[in-house]
Length: 190
Image 1 (cartoon, rainbow, N blue to C red):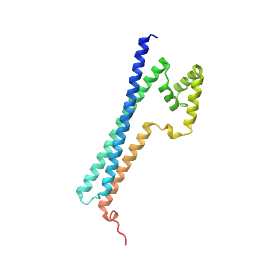
Image 2 (cartoon, rainbow, N blue to C red):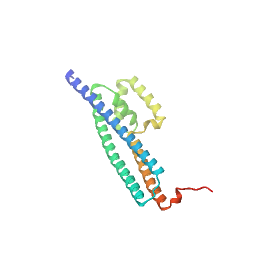
Image 3 (cartoon, rainbow, N blue to C red):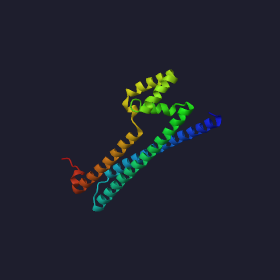
Image 4 (tube, one colour):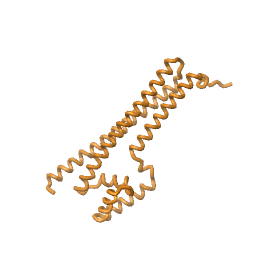
């Protein structure tokens, strides 16, 4: 392969890696902002029980809007993760051409026993560079003992989103009950 082609592919690989990192940062920044705003909302509703019909309507509307925002956020981060996967696929193609390994290693660790393309890559790596394969296998064996270390971003964000949605539903129910039965909130002790 001529040097100009190698240089072009390497440049594309660097650009793709930067894009993947950029998307990853945006996903977690968005998740952090939504988490902080939700906690603030939960705190506000916890410290301000509804006293009028306007309070209960406003509280329920705010909670419903928060749930809608979380559902939209879920669609956005799923789309971003889709693009990350696309970019990662292209990065792995370039790595195979240039004999690079960063994304291939990460992909192999994630899908070690489940995908035929990963098994083919690992067999090829074993034949080409047994020492590198053994190092990767030892790392995988260490990681497979710790399942938390293999949790995917998409899974974590899905759980976080649904947790926040459930908490907002609890806020709606609690807020409604407190409005209907104010003595639930104003506990008195004898």
